[in-house]
Length: 539
Image (cartoon, rainbow, N blue to C red):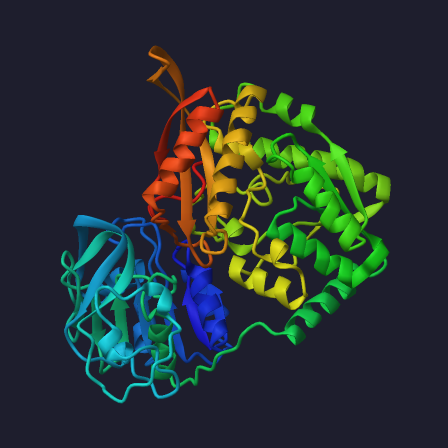
């Protein structure tokens, strides 16, 4: 087992997920609970996660120095590297240049942590590993007999502090243009620190680095994908958990809620009723499409509840994003609990997935980024018990589950749509007029992306009503209209993402259609922010 000590990183659980993929057992613990919770476990290694804090501050999270006397391998990631340096006699300082996003790591010294020619799974020949190599090729398999160290690899950074001085016994094994200690090692004690995040898909050979650490720990990593047998066990677990109770499900039509509801429907049949709440915050044609897919095709009991007035009334005058999300979450639960009483339901199914949890401060030391309506928006005195079969999974894993359940691609690979709907794609107060504008704009964007054949390439694409008015010209007359932002991203698990480099002609076509067909808008901008530092949704 490898123990992951959680210092509050948004990607702590992602480290565990990556290790699970290669058959390595893990346990995530808080730093103050490490010795108590692991005393009866066989520990092969420890990973110190990233975190939002500054290790040199008096109230910083840390770990007892006894950890480094246990004679087991340790890997510090980002904040974790800084913890190692601070505890063992090095020093950390605010970075002269903060890094959020892609960087090039130059490997300056051989180390088993950077063994990219593992005989078990070679992830690309040395010749292919240059600065232009795509981080998405993490699982490429090209045999290579050479053991030459690559000159550099693409990594993903998310930090403001950096190691200024390494402890005795440590040497630098990797640098970037701005950080002299981007990767450090004490090979004798098998203690390693890296400033970048190997767990995110954008780090080239990131999974291999974690495999290498597992080997250093004396473990044997083996690929373990999600299988049909695994899913059948999950469905049996749902059936055992529910027993003879009635269950309702919050069905939005999105990937997560659709697959969660179908798993429960598969488990308990007529004991389950899916409830689709028409909040008035949905896209054009959403309700009609949902009826067709779930009621007609899958013969699931689906109740459609018109609650548009209730949602719009509750959002009146609200402009702060967190407040919007929490009001929407509470309103959803109020409506669902009323329906649960009608069905005498004990459980409520939600399509919560792990990124929803972690962005809502799902671990003790994590910072709240934005409350997901399934998590941060829930009241504490709910009358029904939550059933969240996908809570520990990432979006790509959820899609794999859907595919193995033989769901059509139109469901499993649909672009994500947020539970709060268009409310969080409207900056400022939500009104009927703004909803009308963003619906029409959104349809133009999606239609053109589909016509260009990019649905499968992009993770998500949408339009944002920015609430900013600018001057324009229409028919030789002055116009003063709305600014629309377009957001398109590429990702695997949405814990990190790149903005999509859309063709200029396509962007121009979308822009022309928007300002021509949606007369309230007279300017279109394109969001070129990666995650981090941005999130996918604006609010």
